[in-house]
Image (tube, rainbow, N blue to C red; front, side, top):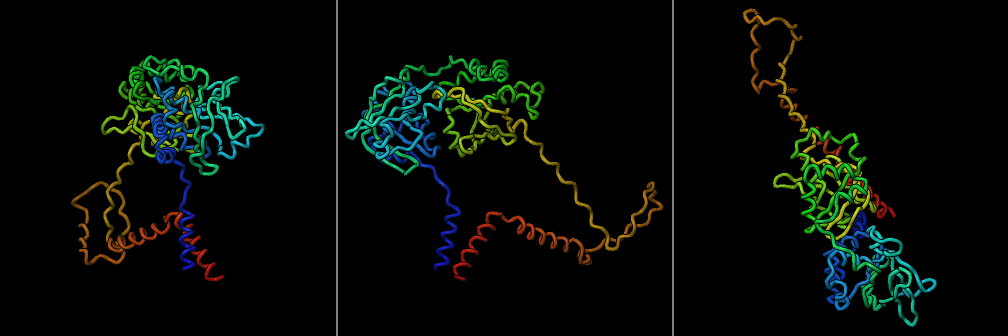
Length: 416
């Protein structure tokens, strides 16, 4: 039983992977934060929180949310709530042991590119007497919120703390919401994507983008260098419809910020997706880097041009080539199998002009019963044996490693 226990423990230890926390599930246990939790999901901040390893969420109770959600658009609400997600781990004990009594902590708002200077940081000050204050890191900003209580901690991974009131940075509530009037081409040109912007205008796809903004749009814009890549096809040889599909393939009809891309497991549909034509992408993450894969090529997301719910633009290093337009040609079908040779083949006759009257009669056909041992039946048996051997050779390396570890563990137990 001891060896079996060790064996099972070994299997478990080899198969366990680190599972990220889920802020939505954590807050769902506390009804007093239901509104805060709902807006984390609506703004996709929950995905960003779940994709990070070390984080502190300053949760607002339902009563404190009214001043945030009031008449403000979702983009503004996201900016405010981003200030309540600290890129560091704080619990009640650490708050009361801040060096020099005050510190500045970076927030998710700082990562959006919309925060200049310390606009995306929070001032945390130990006020003594058991109180800790929170406010904008902009000089002379009031500490308008205080630490109320600890809600949930997974040590050094995620901490959820309740604070009394929203943290409001100067000007954060007055930011305009994106609309169809947003200057997409201007933003793309400023980001070094002039070629892509020009193609959008010439093809008419720009109007499709502008119409989609209010309902949700994410654009992956290749920079100008990307169009000089060796793998990029000659776009002048594509039909107008193919160019439109290519450009639509570079946009997703939903708000999909970087945090959401990090947690995406399923294929991502694009504006080009239509019925049987998938035109989808997949995303993979390595550290903080997100890579998009088309099935033909891949590209990393290089930078964020804009992230303002429900619209965002990213630059990518390569032109995304959909499989539907640039997929590899199928392999040619194999030719017919050669006819079985006679039992006792003679030397190959020399090539000569056909003379039917002088040709010798064809050798008599052999019945299956007369087939020699090295004929088709033997070939079939050899083929089956080869397939079995091939299966052994191609066994997954991970399984072999697992068996090796398991055997070694059990052997060490019995020999000890």
